Length: 592
Image (cartoon, rainbow, N blue to C red; front, side, top):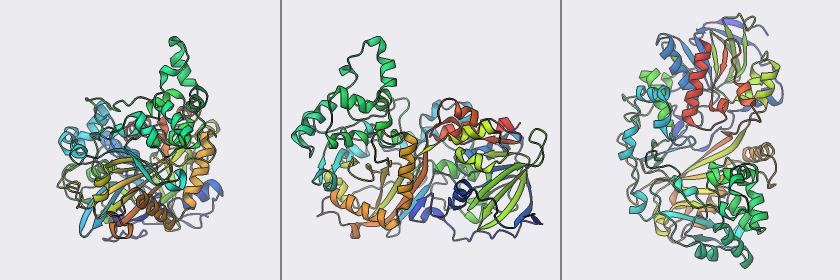
């Protein structure tokens, strides 16, 4: 249908003053409804969205996707072309930040802040001048984390890394004070295992045969491979970790294989059955000697109380000054943002939430056109705006469905990209006496949906104080990297199977799983689910970590197309906030 032209100032209802997504619990992340229109476009090939209202809103730049890459693209564009340039950011979620999601839990008036996705700035001092200048400009003081992160918290409270074996999978509920893997080493200050490998293998609830096999794995490593030294590098980059377990170490016990499969969690973007030996070693999979994940010059401490949502919020504050109080990233930690300010017509940068882009097309030939039309759905109504340029900072695999005249080779390359599903659940506890009693700083949980449970990172800054004593409220993190049922099945198949299973579950299903998990793991005399759990936020990312496509398909897919360029960390096949910023800078430069 032909679009009708109207002025846009009053077409879209302004967000209510009470609108504040970070405080919402239940199913979050890609929350129910956020992907409805995108799925209709991709799966059902829907193209008729009813009458389209053409808003008289013309922008210098339209950004599709309000995650860190999209926000960075808006920032870089104004930095390059001037703060007077008009930018519209469209996002299908009810909050900005993409995977950098802020979760707030309030217990008896005490609000605890956590993260629901993108976690930490990794090795930020090595990010390069462009990113470091961005961080400085939005008020991120990297040196501040040296004192903000309480490295002694875990030692002071005698919290270490353990493994919880659940009754459903392993025959009994049991906590063993050994992680059986290298994964916990990324938590700065977490206490080392208290048991030797021999003691840990003996205490595992496995058969005698399984215990013997587990000990062989724990004593394993590259030294057991019968491969000439000069061929080792090539061998570990081409041979499967699970083949190494089965054929080199003779492991066939289901319990041991399950422990190994889930021993790298989100560091592996899924099960370790998808990894080569070298990648499994780098991800800290079971059977490789524990090493520090980062060295002393690059500690894993650059973490806001709300994870990288702190960076996203600082970017928004830089571009929309009235959204909240504070002059730098630390000062806005406790600022309750006013979401009604995001899409005001007086802004030079506007962020329009709950808006799914369904079509992006040049007005005329892509080589000569100076204008791009962008159609999106908001509140089940179709709208159109125009921009002199567009940065696609959304899931890259969706771009062929949204940009209809994309070159065929480029569209085919983008269709090959994929993401692994990921789930970050935050639980608001009224106290953590039970965690303290059993000494849990982090628990590997190979029998459960959430393969990892941990105390949140101990960061205090901007007036926010991390939980002090076991009697105080806190947030615990629960991490799930869903896998397919068939060990060794291709990654794309496993991700698809796990994704559908994840999205089919209702909140009550997750709540029941979490109830059984925590109730089985924690001492009953100190923990009662109904008494001690205040709230649960399940951040489901059906399309979580960027996994990339085969060959050079990622590079082919991200090429500029006329006045349309492509950002997001997908365009580098990397799940990293700093990479997302770099891809934004590249995309903006390509627009000229």
